[in-house]
Image (cartoon, rainbow, N blue to C red; front, side, top):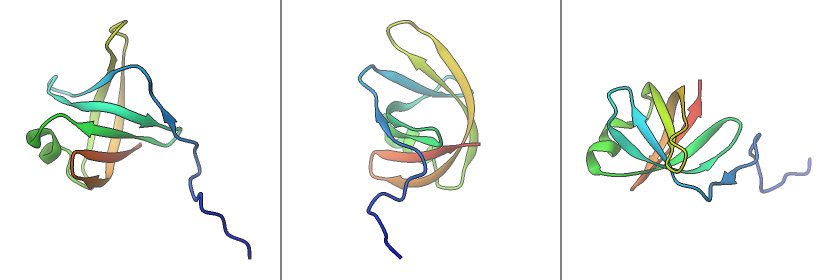
Length: 91
């Protein structure tokens, strides 16, 4: 059986525009770095944001594009954490 190095179901896109991630209280969790059809990578904005995005946590977040102020709200689950960034999947 042949295997490839890319196991991802969805292609990741790196964003060139700034987009903030806010929790349901309006607290800034960080900025979207990459996004795909299945989830996104968030660069956290603080240690408090990193704590709020603990692995396994399910929550509702809003993504706000800084230039236009357009906002979309979605449910996510944190699937992995690293220093200053977290990976989430859309649920």
